[in-house]
Image (tube, rainbow, N blue to C red):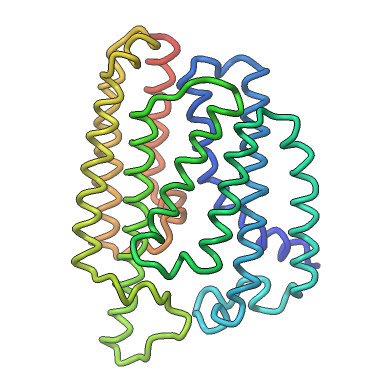
Length: 298
């Protein structure tokens, strides 16, 4: 049965990143209005489809390098479980289904999604090897999810929220680079020759440099979030200043991630960290509950 392999080809675990599309819905006070929720769900589905198409293209382009990687060699295309023609057909089908739906949504969302696709395609082709640009591409991708989520339901979005998203995504991207560097250094210490599949851009980074960037991004994230919670626009929309009390959850999340990064040598796969660390999951659930009651029940 190749169905499991096709599911893995789409990388559904990575769809968690597209939850940022719902930020505008939650913060716009329209969470319980079906028309808004339906549009957000469509936006989420389209970002998932677009992301999966990009992943397929990336796996096709990198299949030879992936075969040399201890983990990536198990990907469906690299392992030979799915042929290149089958992968191309899958990408075309997904793209063909998604495009007509986009034309039924606000044109701004369509432009946002198109830019997301072109930018990530450029990343897969050559931008992933350009130092610093590689992490900014990842950050812009998250920002486009937030902005796209606002466009699809036609609501304004706070510039502070966009800045918060940028700093958080930069933090995760840089932390990922640090995790890859730590793994590379451990291989060298064990006398192993670095795999040819190692990212070329890592030659321009160091663990110390990545840690400095992590500190800057983490600080920017927390400060931007705190300023967002007390900004005049936020207080006016929600009718309360109590959002500031959710800042401890944000701080704990950053501290916990840094702990896992430095003490457990995790961070190479941010999605896996978020989905498997129990304290991180409990903290997020507590944050979501607090946000829900503060926003909708003051």
